[in-house]
Length: 122
Image (cartoon, rainbow, N blue to C red; front, side):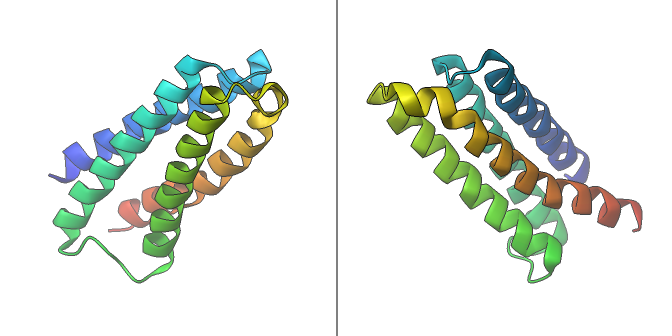
């Protein structure tokens, strides 16, 4: 179960990183970025759930657990907002969305990195 969870979270990392940085490089939010954001959220949520099952509790009240849950909620908000911006075809927000995406990605890295550190010290 642990190996599956780690792989799912690793896939989420790759997807989310590709989505955020390609959006930044291309200078605008595109529909395929949105698909990658939602897939990243899906893999991160499923991987985190599997990790919680392995740990014996989905919710961990420690730094990693709190930042991880916060990151998933922020990714959810990010994906929903990106969906709204694209659906409403808000040109200015489409061109500026990458600024928010980068902030979300940096915050998301915190539990990713603390998870690697915590996992390697076990």
